[in-house]
Structures are given as C-alpha cells and as structure tokens.
Image (tube, rainbow, N blue to C red; front, side, top):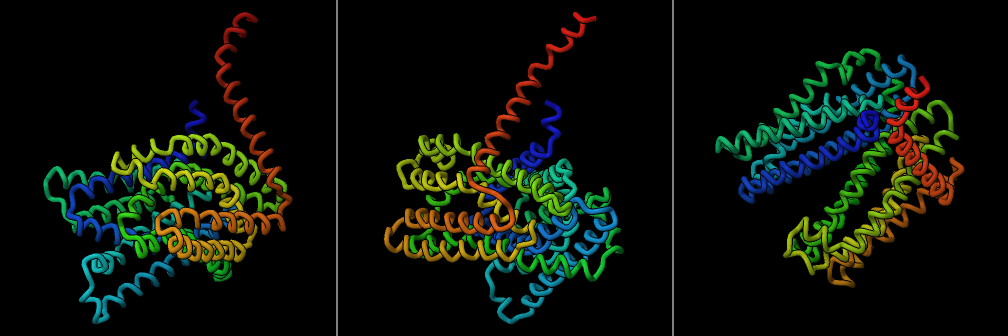
Length: 453
C-alpha cells in the first residue's frame, strides 16, 4: 500500500485531484463573498491570465520535457538553462505588450474587469515564472511528489489568505489579488530556495539549444492555444446564439466531464517523460509498447464510468446543479459527451506521441482541423436545433476527425493498431490486478517461514 501511495501515477492523480478540488473550494468562497460584478472581474482576470500561461506552457513544456527526459547530465543542464532563457523572453514579451497597452488612450476607459487584468497581469506573470520552470523540471524528472507539493502550496496559500480575510471581514477584490500574488510569490520562492527550478543552470544555456526549443515550441504553442480555443468555442456560440441561461445548463453537463479529464491528465503527465526517454534512447519498440499500454488501459478503465453515467445521468446532474436542473437538457448532453469519452485516450496520446516523435506540426494540424470542424458544427447545429443539443452533437464529428487524423499520422511512425491497443490495455489491466492480488496474499508468508524454521 505504501508503494502505491508513492508511485508516480498516484502522486500525479493526487496532484490533479487536489488542484481541482481546492480550486472549486476557492471559487465557491469567492462567489459567496464578493458582489457579482467583482466576481465576474476576478473570473475574467483568471481567464486572461490562463491564456498567458497557456502560451508559456505551450511554447516550453513539451519541448523541454522531450529534450530533457533521458538525457545526460550535461545535456540536461544545457536544456534547462536554455529553457530559462526562453521562458524569460516569453514572459518579458507578454508583460511588455500589456504594459504598452496601458499607455493607450483607450486604456483609461476600460471596465473594471479588463482594468484589473492590465494592472496586475505583469507582476503576477513574473512571480509565477520560477514555479512554472520548477513544474516543468520536476515533471521531466518524474518527481511527482514535488509537483504535488508545489500545487498544494499555491492553492492552500491562496485559500488560507481568502479564509483569513473572510474571518476578519476585510475581503475585497483587491485583497483577493494580493492573496493570489502572495501565494504565487511563496510558491516560486520555495522552488528557488529548494533548487527545484535550478536557476544556476542558466549559465549552461546555448544559442543552438534555445533555437531548438523555439523551433519545436512554435508548433506546440499553436496546439495549446488551439486546444484552449477548442474548449471555449462552445461557450462563445451558445452565449451568442442562445444566451447565458442555456450556457449554464450546458456547462453543468460539461463540468462533470472533469471525472474523465482528471485521470487523463494524470496518466499523461506520468507518461510523457517515459515516452520522451524512450524516444531519446531511440527505443521505438518501448515507445510503442508504452503508448499501447497507457491508451488501452485508460480506454478499458473508462468503460464502466461511461456505462454508469449514461444509465444514471440525472444523478450527477442533481448532485452538481441541484433540483432545478433535473429535467433539463443537461442529462442528455452529459450522455452525449460521456459516450465520446471512450475515444479520448487514443486521441490525447496520439497528440502527445506526435510531439514526442518530433512531429509537432502534425499535432498542430490535428488541433486546427478539430477547431474548424467544431466551429462550423456549432454554428450549423445551433441554427438547426435551436438548443444546446446542436453544440453537443457538433462535438461528435470534432472528436472523430481528431481521432482518425491522429491515428493515421501515428501509424506512419509506429506499428500500432486499434486492436493492438485494446489488447495491450487489457493485458496491462490483468497484470496490475494480479500484482494487487498477490500483494494481498503476502501476509501469509511469515507463517510459512515459521513452520519451515
């Protein structure tokens, strides 16, 4: 049991669960304590901050991990130093753009939401930089215990500040921002003091390695931004064509999809360094085996979740949204969304594998194709149906296009088949089950030893 709790898979899952759960807690506190206008300004600030973080992550995360994992110590120092340099360039560039925008005459006339972003984004983005580099470094090194610590430190620090202000009766939007800045500064300071982001390796940077990371990142950042827009396109079209009430029903169903996203993100976080290490060692058979095992096992693991949700969709709708959403389209939208989740593992791993195989351009094309299909499908579906079923149905061709394109592109480099993936996943599941059962039978061993003695 102790070995299970220390495994990378468990620690990655715990990190994602903790981050998602504590985020829900903080959002719930702020929604109840702040006026609606200030709550909206805070959500808008986090959304734009998230867009900036997506750009930085998209440019560096995958490029860094694939170059760092499995490399020699000298190469790791070069990659990390070059990543620090590129991270500073990206940070300074985005911060500079925001600061320049504040000089425009129109900046004085913006509302409180955009004004909050223009005021506090530069400092926030700089303060989160060391923590971001530490996250990349520890993920590549497969130190998921440290990743968990960083996530908990950030979230617990922020929530503690908010709760303290609530108890003192001094909670305001401005002070919420101060709490966020303090938590970010604390997390980055710990990462620097403990050496988890290895700032000293900046001296090992090389222009060639910076160019290497940038050449890869220019494609992977497109995939990250495209994925962000892909997740946001339904929200945009529903709000524009049906209004906020319909969006609330639709988002209720989509929110429950986190039950699928959390294990997907956790498994992918542990798999990317291993896939990258296999590629850097030119061990394509191992890379293929790892891909088949992870994608296949996740697919089989989702089957009971999908079946249970399809049969009992009204239950999670009631638990998340309450009785007022029972009897709306939310349950059927959830059934449609969860049914397509069986394609998610291979779709996501196809994108990751294309990046690892140094084919980021193909992954970018895949994301752009999916975005184009979803935008066109949303517009046609909402016009024809006149309700949120149109957007839900548009997701089916979107995921199919991404699934088929990714699978076909991946077959050009790796000898994979859908049947092989399912068989490998089933075999891996049986192996894990046998190991689990054998561990439970271990306590009988000491008795046998005593008898022999």
